[in-house]
Image 1 (spheres, rainbow, N blue to C red):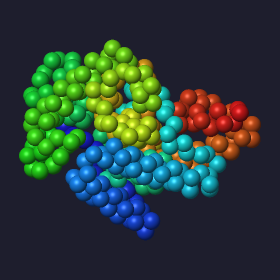
Image 2: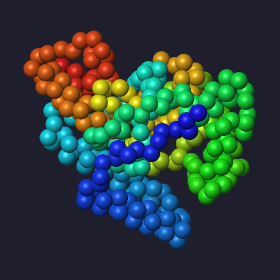
Image 3: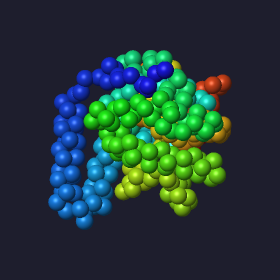
Image 4: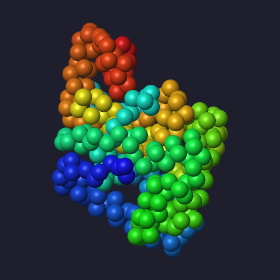
Length: 290
């Protein structure tokens, strides 16, 4: 059984600007850790600075793209998607989510054949929530424990007890989603509904960047799973009709198609069939009607 998406050979070589950005990311993380250790009272301020930096990076990326293209990218636009529509995985990218949000990337990263339901994560959720199997008896739990024993940190956990506590929060998340349904991160913040796995994000933008279910869009428009496995697995098990998602990467060929669609709509055309219902084209149809 696959453990998850393979490492992507499809992340293109970094440009000088991207290398500089990666260096700055690393420097800021190191500085933030040092400041927090020295001045823990300023944790809230440090989190806010990190959030604002990520937000500025996302907006700058999309501003540069939108200046040159007919179909703009709205990085924080949340799409409501039938979870059954998200079948395959996107190849994993080593870049942080805020560096992927709103990007257009060429290559074969959309050619992964692993299906979400084939991952050990989904299989563990299915066995635990539908069959009552304890987390500790799933292959997913054993795999993560093995990785932590080898020195890796997973979801902020470095020990069996910490990971067990996290699994208990997943139990509470399942019950919350079953009782209250699915909210976008913005709606969740406004509703006052408790989020059992909330990470003390400093801003709404940071919550959208890191905590929404994330998809990539393949060259043919297929929505590929990129991140947010807990909520997507629960959505599939509960059989809900729609979940909020945010788009990280778009394939360059799909982005070119979006440009063509935007121009077509601006000239009075209309979409038919599957294109009319594609969630990543809805904003273009709205813009053409306004």
